[in-house]
Image (cartoon, rainbow, N blue to C red):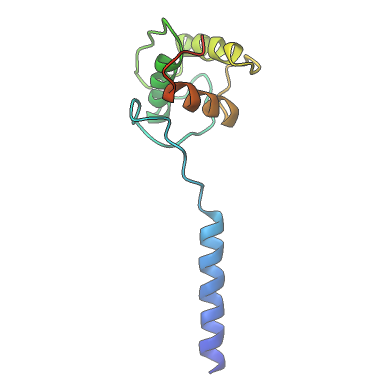
Length: 115
């Protein structure tokens, strides 16, 4: 009986740790951009599907943004990220983290533009 109780306790602990360690599901901005729901930290030099998501969300968040959705975080993407950050009151540092993603999600889902 002790073995069963111990095994159940270990299983419950493992399950609770696994649930606690699982990343929270990202709130997808809208059906407009569905390259990925991942919202990792991004900066110049990165290339991934998440960068395509970033480029798409920038397109729908800013009037006259015409970035190519190539998945490469180059100078054009950097410029648009900084412009977007400035428009929404964030420090225009070109680094895409949780605050920038949150604003992008908001404006991508909106019918208007951040700038």
